[in-house]
Image (cartoon, rainbow, N blue to C red; front, side):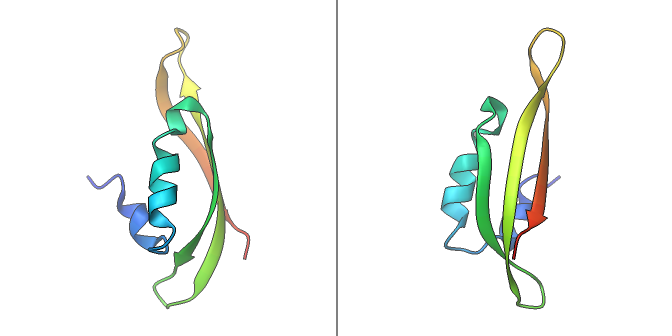
Length: 71
């Protein structure tokens, strides 16, 4: 119901840059580092990558990705 809720954890200064990059996920160009603010107030750095998964006809039907803490 809320596909962009994950953006709420991103540091406010990094959100515009990450949001812009996220629009390119289906193109395969999503590879970004940003800060998140955990619920306990701790700031962490995240390395986030995503790429499109295509069906036999080449149509993107899913975005797969990996985010890891690089703090």
